[in-house]
Image (cartoon, rainbow, N blue to C red; front, side, top):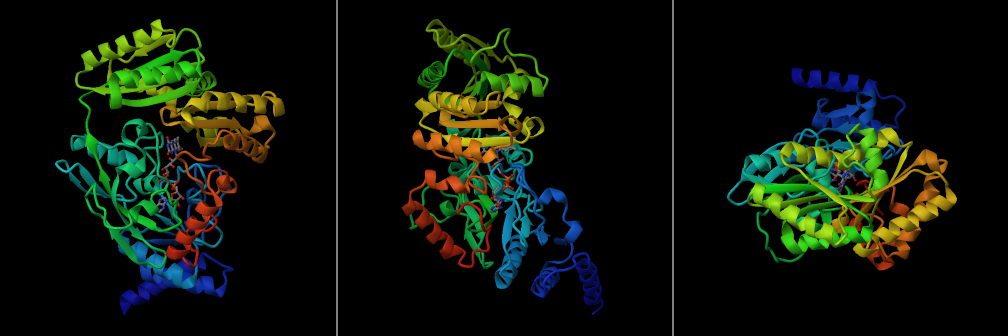
Length: 482
Ligand code: FAD
């Protein structure tokens, strides 16, 4: 009785913070607070501004409430209530997404997974790890290394993005060449569906041909089909040695020739091939106050990681391979890191995307997939089209070119703020090159108008049917993707 009175007092005080709500919303919030408590449910000004938007620069929206669950049961209880009251739900991970997928919609409940961050179990022998969805990518990587293994996905936002967000966006990053995207790292999932029911799919097996592989539907679903609560991850053997090289090349075709040459020489041990156009390199050096990597500027630089057994002999082998490419004219200059510290310093050049928001006003970011051989011509076509319409525009090209993935960032101020026109122009050229409007960041809000450029009407109809089957009331992340 006494506990009940205290709880009622807390709920009454919490509700005072939100005024002017419809009666149905008030009743919903009271029920949510009663079920999960004021420690888990925040309303009104108690919801900090950082939960109102993500890294994409989408205009902020304050949710009706923020739920910070500590367990799958909390997520389930929250969704049961949202379903019963038809309240939209927006799952939130580390909010580093670049497509606006985690930005709250009006009168929604945002569910932040940040307090479900436990690494629950690691088996070095089976090379698997079970984690809660709110664990950061970096925490997963570090836990894997401690167990003598590695995790196959890496990306610049590693310290903030969460494994649940990585699964929900099917993240890519720097390791795709060797280990594939997030989809290839997921053995099992636990998901809470729109009506609050829990779908357990945590089986530590690579092969399992027992009907539909249900977990695949949730990988890349961007919070529109369910809330991912736990993930069973596959880990990889730790390479005994790694060589990192920064390589200068005269043209895009030369860069592709170098990639092919290195893969022929080292096979699947080529772990990364990140290509940077000169304008990206110059911006990176300036924004991060780095030392210029070479005495003169070159049209293209690639960061190449190769795995092997012994540091010294691997470096020699990489040097020899690059030397041969230099004789053929595909390599202009190269530097090979002599230590882990030097390798990190070389990779810093590729970390410039973390500086985009501070240096472009605002950045208009693209993440497109193209037939690999066409990427150079595509970049030239975009540069020429933008030059003609917005002389003096500032546009950078870089990407995971080994996977056919190009990133383009344009400074909004240099195209007179005509963001939509920039998007339309670029996506039209993507269509002409038979590419995809999103290689890895997802559709979210930003690319929704262009999804039909990469998907047939039949595919879109099938996606809508799946959405309707799992979320018939359409409460999960409404307005995103479809
Ligand atoms: P959020 O931004 O919080 O959410 C993204 C989407 O997932 C939203 O639709 C959200 O609703 C949904 N979601 C989040 N958690 C859950 C959950 N538990 N259950 C269901 N749905 C959920 N991406 C790449 O793929 N490759 C890169 O190389 C890369 N580099 C980046 C570099 C920088 C500097 C930055 C800022 C971003 C980069 N990104 C990259 C984009 C971003 O980091 C990834 O998309 C990442 O996977 C998002 O994870 P998050 O936890 O921040 O998700």
